[in-house]
Amino acid sequence: MDIDVVMPCLNEAEALPWVLGRMPRGFHAIVVDNGSTDGSAKIAAELGATVVSEPRRGFGAACHAGLTAAASDVVCFMDADASLDPEQLPRVCGPVVSGAADLVLGRRVPRPGGSWPVHARLGNAVLARTLRRRTGAPLHDLGPMRAGRRLELIALGLVDRRFGYPLEMVLRAAEAGRRIGEVEVDYLPRKGRSKVTGTLRGTLRAIGDMRRVMAGRAP
Image (cartoon, rainbow, N blue to C red; front, side, top):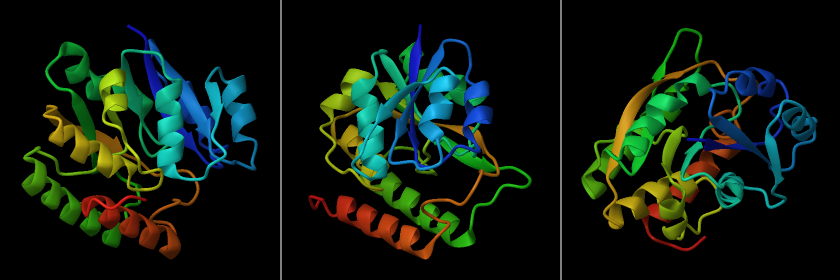
């Protein structure tokens, strides 16, 4: 079974060679360029990835463009910044492939040298606790490495195109009665500065987007 891996990308030229070089056999990267100015798209294409251009800025916009460009039955998502190891994709998509789950998220476990700011970790823990109460899903992290069946994900009708996209995916999947699971994955030192936790503006935008999704307000 071939599995497409959607990778939102904004100026990740430094990380892409390592990330794409560790893509497991049977997994194909779809790098969604979201306005990079550092040659990320060219590097990704040269390394064998399918490159999709999404001019509308936003994490969700890039994720959804990759989802609609994918063709495989099962689709994975992961960041392109080297904070997650592609070699661990099989453990995330395994329960979906076997039919044991419909949506699986990778619970990030920090490894030596990794950087997960305290404010981001605490915010993630609070969000995960809220999700457990609201959906009943056994989640401890709103992890960016995840897997699900393509047609089922498209059928969720996700509308957020910013940082609320991963949260909306979980909420709508739960509302649709999907079985949601979690497996542990390593959280490694990323290349470059995070677009979310690396800046105050990014952190505040992400919080605002997720609050809006939780409240059920349209973007």
